[in-house]
Image (cartoon, rainbow, N blue to C red; front, side, top):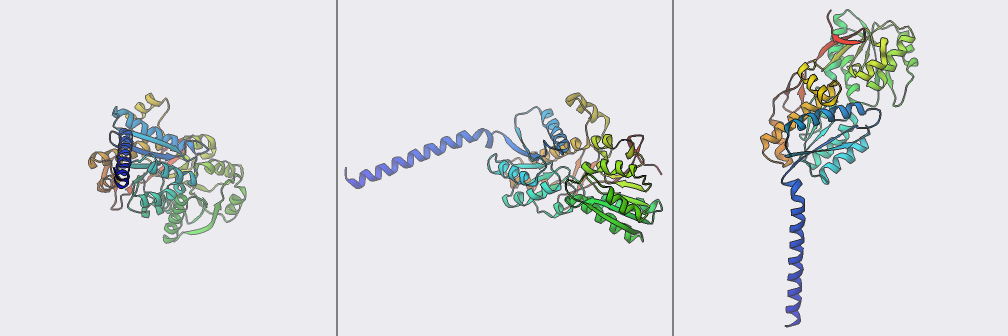
Length: 370
């Protein structure tokens, strides 16, 4: 055999070995890519915001466990409430786990950090709870299960004016897009209806003493104060305003609906008004959830359950695990029977929820009656 023929044989053998190796690799990957549809979930499962992430996780798990099928695999990633971790999580879910769709149960900064990755890598992301306006315009691979906080601010301002208040002040963190949107909505709506804003205070990350802000606001004598806040600071603000003897009416953006926040605020939460997207959770859902997990379902568990339901409907309609097909199926959903209300999606795939006005009375949250 000539030298050239020997070389040709060696090359052919190398190609055959490479082809066999690749085939084995494809077969090894088959159980995930062909037999199971993988769904990624990321949110704060530990840290001081874990109640939101674990609550949504329970809702997702609740739905998929009831299906009693091995067709779907949900992979959970913990962001600890950090946007950098959210970026790492969604990259891992897409590049390593090859998910067909992701569910973001993080706060606004986390979901906003992840949205460009979902868009660039063309894997749809469904957001459970974040209400940031920027997410509504984050691209056609991001879908929201909530309306934006701007509408909560509008409704809070309408309530304040309806109650006859002419002057108002606001307190909001400067590090969360959604609550800042809520404040902007409140200020715009209140001023449009001839109301006067007497002060606007912003909270920095990590602050726990808000008395200086409260004293400054109180000195201008507003009739109502809009707290567009997160659960972390809401209870502290309410307790400190009570300690200072402040008598202004407080309207909150629903952060007080977190059971831990309501308990921490104690009597200081009484008489606080609330603008909220959260309708009452049906008793049947609450009872079944309680039997399964041993505790009452928080609203973010209902939101996680709804997110899982929307994603499941898209996967069923698409009849495909291809992320683009799933995105198209998500975009085609215009209504979905949610746990607490029917979700109606706009042309950008973002839910439009009804706003409910509530009040804290004797430590309990109830519908507000004028």
